[in-house]
Image (cartoon, rainbow, N blue to C red; front, side, top):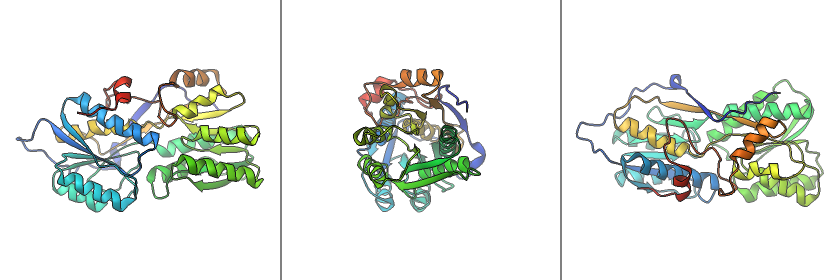
Length: 343
């Protein structure tokens, strides 16, 4: 199967939701705005990069007075409290990475009633008052599944390392993966949740290797390096693996014997969401939902391997997404992202 190797392209899913009910700023509205950030997972490199992109774009825009970060590890109820605290703190807009696609809807309605713009990133929410700025996770899962099927010749067992239950990013990615597998009766799947936690993902792989179950391929997002470490420690030959564009995953090209497909999942959707929020606050036209079309790089193809080598950057941590810009939505530099400084 031929896999696209061009850089990130994006498409707008304007038809998903209408713009009816969007907050309309008054003529006397301030020209500089306070941006709030509610993120329910911290200490995860991808989420950290997402937060840094919010700060970097807020600073680059010249339109943000401050970024109020209310991020903390927790569930939907904690995120609801974080959003309410941001509303009380005077945030004009809130960027949220939702723990659940529906539970936050009441607090989003509260924000809307007070003229606060809410932009959901990474995972979508179903509230008609929110804007969604995400990667196309169904396409992500479908690309990964199609490549693995091709590598396995339509037969074998795939270990699926999922993310967090209830997150639309995980649900959509899994749905796309299942779409690719439909009609391939020779493929069996062992599916486990990792909550996007490195230690949990590593333990899951170690347990599967110790169980004696023959694993022929692996589908994961952002934990490829942990899989290769586990296989190396167990002294077992590598199997084909579909991973993300995280720096640690791309570093697999440095390990002899690895074979992988890297699919883009940009953490800088946080920075793109800042632009969406500012557009709405300034009364500019803005679609309700934007889905970024993922790009895939096949390490077994010369052009894919070249793209992987070009994207890998020793300055990034393992969990950093190597896709560091989104056309028309981010204007910061790589240096700005790494500095992680807001206004």
